[in-house]
Length: 137
Image (cartoon, rainbow, N blue to C red; front, top):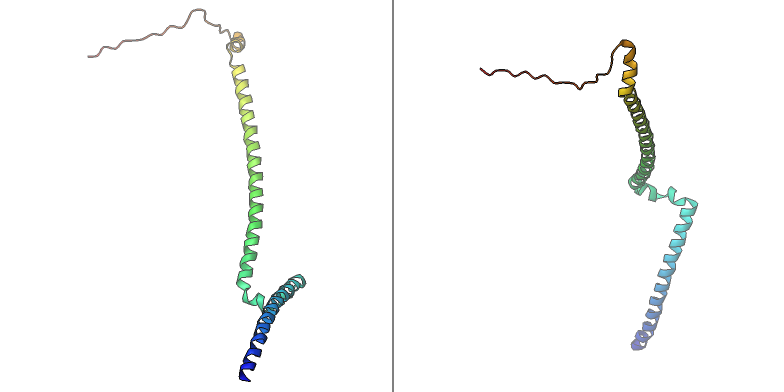
């Protein structure tokens, strides 16, 4: 009879192994659904999970704040660059305009007209350069 009991136990072990596999998968899917429900309800925030991972949660929040602040900083920096480029463009335009006015006012014909009332005339003869040679003694 002992032999019969042994044989009869073997099929029951196989059945229990299959049942364990089914129950393991069922437990895993049930755990996932419970986790999803806890996340959706917010129940996971009230458990030991938060206390055990407090430092990690604060680190993640810090990184999120840092990312948002970096975005604002880059936006402000691009606005400042655009404003300064506009200012440089305005100053360059003023420089070109002033330089053009100066060239126009200092033209030879304009200078002759302005100096005529003072009695100064334009020379007809070209200018001569006088060079003095020094004796090397």
